[in-house]
Image 1 (cartoon, rainbow, N blue to C red):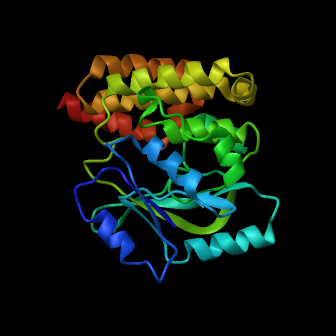
Image 2 (cartoon, rainbow, N blue to C red; image 1 turned 90 degrees about the vertical axis):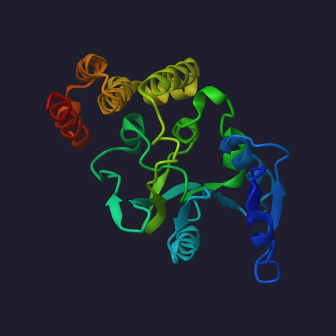
Length: 265
Protein backbone atom coordinates (compact mmCIF):
# COMPACT_ATOMS: atom_id res chain seq x y z
CA UNK A 1 0.00 0.00 0.00
CA UNK A 2 1.31 3.43 -0.96
CA UNK A 3 0.15 6.46 1.02
CA UNK A 4 0.87 9.87 -0.51
CA UNK A 5 0.70 12.70 2.01
CA UNK A 6 -0.04 15.89 0.09
CA UNK A 7 1.80 18.15 2.57
CA UNK A 8 -1.08 17.76 5.05
CA UNK A 9 -1.14 19.29 8.50
CA UNK A 10 -2.85 16.36 10.22
CA UNK A 11 -1.46 13.02 11.47
CA UNK A 12 -1.56 11.22 8.10
CA UNK A 13 2.05 10.03 8.19
CA UNK A 14 1.91 8.96 11.84
CA UNK A 15 -1.34 7.02 11.36
CA UNK A 16 -0.15 5.36 8.13
CA UNK A 17 3.13 4.26 9.71
CA UNK A 18 1.25 2.79 12.69
CA UNK A 19 0.12 0.00 10.34
CA UNK A 20 3.71 -0.97 9.55
CA UNK A 21 4.16 -4.60 10.51
CA UNK A 22 0.55 -5.43 9.72
CA UNK A 23 0.64 -4.02 6.18
CA UNK A 24 3.41 -3.34 3.68
CA UNK A 25 3.15 0.46 3.81
CA UNK A 26 5.19 2.95 1.80
CA UNK A 27 4.57 6.55 2.86
CA UNK A 28 5.50 9.36 0.49
CA UNK A 29 5.31 13.02 1.51
CA UNK A 30 4.98 15.77 -1.09
CA UNK A 31 7.23 18.77 -0.51
CA UNK A 32 4.27 21.10 -1.10
CA UNK A 33 0.53 20.86 -1.58
CA UNK A 34 0.07 19.47 -5.08
CA UNK A 35 -3.08 18.57 -6.98
CA UNK A 36 -4.31 14.98 -6.71
CA UNK A 37 -3.13 14.00 -10.21
CA UNK A 38 0.47 14.51 -9.12
CA UNK A 39 -0.07 12.44 -5.95
CA UNK A 40 -1.84 9.64 -7.80
CA UNK A 41 0.88 9.45 -10.45
CA UNK A 42 3.60 9.48 -7.81
CA UNK A 43 1.90 6.71 -5.89
CA UNK A 44 1.54 4.57 -9.03
CA UNK A 45 5.23 5.03 -9.82
CA UNK A 46 6.18 3.63 -6.41
CA UNK A 47 3.62 0.82 -6.38
CA UNK A 48 4.88 -2.72 -6.90
CA UNK A 49 1.71 -4.67 -7.69
CA UNK A 50 0.46 -5.71 -11.10
CA UNK A 51 -2.61 -3.48 -10.68
CA UNK A 52 -3.13 -0.08 -9.10
CA UNK A 53 -6.33 1.15 -7.47
CA UNK A 54 -6.73 4.69 -6.19
CA UNK A 55 -8.52 5.82 -3.05
CA UNK A 56 -8.94 9.50 -2.28
CA UNK A 57 -8.67 10.64 1.33
CA UNK A 58 -12.39 11.32 1.70
CA UNK A 59 -13.57 8.03 0.16
CA UNK A 60 -13.77 4.44 1.37
CA UNK A 61 -13.62 0.98 -0.19
CA UNK A 62 -16.20 -1.56 0.90
CA UNK A 63 -14.67 -4.30 3.09
CA UNK A 64 -14.82 -6.93 0.33
CA UNK A 65 -13.79 -4.71 -2.60
CA UNK A 66 -10.17 -5.84 -2.81
CA UNK A 67 -11.07 -9.49 -2.30
CA UNK A 68 -13.64 -9.33 -5.10
CA UNK A 69 -11.13 -7.56 -7.35
CA UNK A 70 -8.47 -10.20 -6.67
CA UNK A 71 -10.93 -12.97 -7.55
CA UNK A 72 -11.90 -11.11 -10.71
CA UNK A 73 -8.25 -10.78 -11.79
CA UNK A 74 -7.66 -14.46 -11.16
CA UNK A 75 -10.81 -15.47 -13.04
CA UNK A 76 -10.37 -13.04 -15.94
CA UNK A 77 -6.61 -12.49 -16.32
CA UNK A 78 -7.00 -10.77 -19.70
CA UNK A 79 -8.92 -7.81 -18.23
CA UNK A 80 -6.41 -5.03 -17.71
CA UNK A 81 -8.83 -2.23 -16.77
CA UNK A 82 -11.97 -2.68 -14.66
CA UNK A 83 -14.03 -0.93 -12.04
CA UNK A 84 -16.59 -1.60 -9.33
CA UNK A 85 -19.87 0.29 -9.13
CA UNK A 86 -19.66 3.13 -6.64
CA UNK A 87 -22.16 4.61 -4.22
CA UNK A 88 -22.32 8.25 -3.19
CA UNK A 89 -23.16 8.61 0.51
CA UNK A 90 -23.76 11.51 2.84
CA UNK A 91 -21.52 12.37 5.77
CA UNK A 92 -23.23 9.83 8.03
CA UNK A 93 -22.92 7.05 5.44
CA UNK A 94 -26.49 6.99 4.13
CA UNK A 95 -26.75 6.30 0.35
CA UNK A 96 -27.54 9.38 -1.74
CA UNK A 97 -27.04 8.27 -5.32
CA UNK A 98 -25.61 5.45 -7.42
CA UNK A 99 -24.32 6.38 -10.90
CA UNK A 100 -25.87 4.08 -13.47
CA UNK A 101 -23.89 2.03 -15.98
CA UNK A 102 -26.45 0.75 -18.47
CA UNK A 103 -25.83 -2.81 -19.59
CA UNK A 104 -27.38 -1.99 -22.95
CA UNK A 105 -24.84 0.77 -23.63
CA UNK A 106 -21.36 0.19 -24.96
CA UNK A 107 -18.51 1.37 -22.77
CA UNK A 108 -17.63 3.87 -25.49
CA UNK A 109 -21.08 5.44 -25.18
CA UNK A 110 -20.92 5.31 -21.39
CA UNK A 111 -17.64 7.22 -21.27
CA UNK A 112 -18.79 9.72 -23.88
CA UNK A 113 -21.71 10.58 -21.59
CA UNK A 114 -19.62 11.12 -18.48
CA UNK A 115 -17.58 9.41 -15.80
CA UNK A 116 -19.65 6.95 -13.74
CA UNK A 117 -16.35 5.28 -12.77
CA UNK A 118 -15.18 8.28 -10.73
CA UNK A 119 -11.64 7.40 -9.54
CA UNK A 120 -11.75 5.45 -6.28
CA UNK A 121 -12.44 1.79 -6.95
CA UNK A 122 -11.00 1.78 -10.48
CA UNK A 123 -8.37 -0.92 -11.11
CA UNK A 124 -5.82 -0.55 -13.89
CA UNK A 125 -2.90 -2.78 -14.77
CA UNK A 126 0.05 -0.70 -13.61
CA UNK A 127 2.05 -0.63 -16.90
CA UNK A 128 -1.14 0.35 -18.77
CA UNK A 129 -1.81 3.18 -16.34
CA UNK A 130 1.76 4.46 -16.39
CA UNK A 131 1.63 4.60 -20.19
CA UNK A 132 -1.19 7.16 -19.89
CA UNK A 133 -1.31 8.46 -16.28
CA UNK A 134 -3.29 11.48 -15.07
CA UNK A 135 -2.71 14.75 -16.85
CA UNK A 136 -1.41 17.17 -14.21
CA UNK A 137 -2.53 20.34 -16.01
CA UNK A 138 -4.30 22.65 -13.51
CA UNK A 139 -6.94 23.37 -16.17
CA UNK A 140 -8.18 19.77 -15.83
CA UNK A 141 -8.72 19.65 -12.07
CA UNK A 142 -12.15 18.13 -11.52
CA UNK A 143 -12.17 16.09 -14.74
CA UNK A 144 -8.69 14.57 -14.79
CA UNK A 145 -10.04 11.09 -14.09
CA UNK A 146 -12.62 11.24 -16.94
CA UNK A 147 -9.87 12.48 -19.25
CA UNK A 148 -7.54 9.66 -18.19
CA UNK A 149 -10.11 6.85 -18.49
CA UNK A 150 -11.06 7.91 -22.02
CA UNK A 151 -7.40 7.88 -23.07
CA UNK A 152 -6.85 4.42 -21.57
CA UNK A 153 -10.15 3.15 -23.00
CA UNK A 154 -9.06 4.15 -26.50
CA UNK A 155 -6.37 1.46 -26.08
CA UNK A 156 -8.15 -0.95 -23.74
CA UNK A 157 -11.77 -0.60 -22.64
CA UNK A 158 -12.80 -1.13 -19.01
CA UNK A 159 -15.31 -3.70 -17.80
CA UNK A 160 -17.45 -3.88 -14.68
CA UNK A 161 -16.28 -6.08 -11.81
CA UNK A 162 -19.12 -7.66 -9.79
CA UNK A 163 -19.76 -6.30 -6.31
CA UNK A 164 -19.88 -2.85 -4.77
CA UNK A 165 -16.82 -0.67 -4.84
CA UNK A 166 -16.04 2.73 -3.37
CA UNK A 167 -18.18 4.86 -1.10
CA UNK A 168 -17.80 8.51 -2.12
CA UNK A 169 -18.70 10.90 0.67
CA UNK A 170 -20.77 13.83 -0.63
CA UNK A 171 -19.66 16.87 1.35
CA UNK A 172 -19.38 20.58 0.73
CA UNK A 173 -15.57 20.53 0.35
CA UNK A 174 -15.45 18.14 -2.62
CA UNK A 175 -14.02 19.67 -5.78
CA UNK A 176 -17.25 19.13 -7.70
CA UNK A 177 -19.34 20.65 -4.90
CA UNK A 178 -17.27 23.84 -5.15
CA UNK A 179 -17.38 23.83 -8.96
CA UNK A 180 -18.68 27.01 -10.60
CA UNK A 181 -20.30 26.87 -14.02
CA UNK A 182 -17.58 29.17 -15.37
CA UNK A 183 -14.82 26.86 -14.11
CA UNK A 184 -16.60 23.82 -15.53
CA UNK A 185 -16.95 25.53 -18.89
CA UNK A 186 -13.23 26.32 -19.07
CA UNK A 187 -12.27 22.82 -17.87
CA UNK A 188 -14.44 21.11 -20.47
CA UNK A 189 -13.03 23.33 -23.23
CA UNK A 190 -9.52 22.21 -22.27
CA UNK A 191 -10.55 18.55 -21.96
CA UNK A 192 -12.37 18.52 -25.29
CA UNK A 193 -9.59 20.24 -27.20
CA UNK A 194 -6.99 17.86 -25.78
CA UNK A 195 -8.97 14.69 -26.48
CA UNK A 196 -10.11 15.67 -29.96
CA UNK A 197 -6.65 16.66 -31.15
CA UNK A 198 -5.37 13.19 -30.26
CA UNK A 199 -6.12 10.78 -33.15
CA UNK A 200 -6.74 7.79 -30.88
CA UNK A 201 -9.22 9.46 -28.52
CA UNK A 202 -10.83 11.45 -31.33
CA UNK A 203 -11.56 8.21 -33.19
CA UNK A 204 -12.78 6.57 -30.00
CA UNK A 205 -15.29 9.35 -29.26
CA UNK A 206 -16.38 9.89 -32.87
CA UNK A 207 -19.49 7.62 -32.82
CA UNK A 208 -20.89 9.52 -29.83
CA UNK A 209 -19.44 12.98 -30.35
CA UNK A 210 -22.83 14.71 -30.05
CA UNK A 211 -23.42 13.04 -26.69
CA UNK A 212 -19.89 13.94 -25.57
CA UNK A 213 -20.46 17.64 -26.33
CA UNK A 214 -24.05 17.60 -25.09
CA UNK A 215 -23.33 16.08 -21.70
CA UNK A 216 -20.80 18.82 -20.97
CA UNK A 217 -23.30 21.55 -21.88
CA UNK A 218 -25.88 19.74 -19.75
CA UNK A 219 -23.57 19.70 -16.72
CA UNK A 220 -22.85 23.43 -17.10
CA UNK A 221 -26.60 24.11 -17.40
CA UNK A 222 -27.24 22.39 -14.07
CA UNK A 223 -24.34 24.16 -12.36
CA UNK A 224 -25.47 27.53 -13.71
CA UNK A 225 -29.05 26.96 -12.50
CA UNK A 226 -27.77 26.00 -9.06
CA UNK A 227 -25.83 29.27 -8.98
CA UNK A 228 -28.84 31.37 -10.10
CA UNK A 229 -27.44 32.01 -13.59
CA UNK A 230 -30.74 30.99 -15.15
CA UNK A 231 -30.26 32.62 -18.54
CA UNK A 232 -26.90 30.88 -18.96
CA UNK A 233 -28.51 27.64 -17.80
CA UNK A 234 -31.27 27.89 -20.40
CA UNK A 235 -28.80 28.61 -23.20
CA UNK A 236 -26.54 25.72 -22.20
CA UNK A 237 -29.48 23.36 -21.92
CA UNK A 238 -30.60 24.33 -25.42
CA UNK A 239 -27.13 23.57 -26.75
CA UNK A 240 -27.09 20.23 -24.93
CA UNK A 241 -30.37 19.15 -26.52
CA UNK A 242 -29.23 20.25 -29.97
CA UNK A 243 -26.09 18.14 -29.56
CA UNK A 244 -28.01 15.13 -28.26
CA UNK A 245 -31.84 15.26 -28.00
CA UNK A 246 -31.90 12.16 -25.79
CA UNK A 247 -30.51 14.23 -22.91
CA UNK A 248 -34.00 15.67 -22.52
CA UNK A 249 -35.09 12.41 -20.91
CA UNK A 250 -32.56 12.03 -18.09
CA UNK A 251 -32.55 12.37 -14.32
CA UNK A 252 -30.24 15.33 -14.64
CA UNK A 253 -32.84 17.16 -16.74
CA UNK A 254 -35.51 16.49 -14.11
CA UNK A 255 -33.13 17.94 -11.51
CA UNK A 256 -32.51 20.94 -13.77
CA UNK A 257 -36.23 21.64 -14.16
CA UNK A 258 -36.60 21.56 -10.38
CA UNK A 259 -33.80 24.12 -10.03
CA UNK A 260 -35.54 26.38 -12.53
CA UNK A 261 -38.84 26.10 -10.67
CA UNK A 262 -37.19 26.97 -7.37
CA UNK A 263 -35.63 30.01 -9.00
CA UNK A 264 -38.99 31.14 -10.33
CA UNK A 265 -40.59 31.08 -6.87
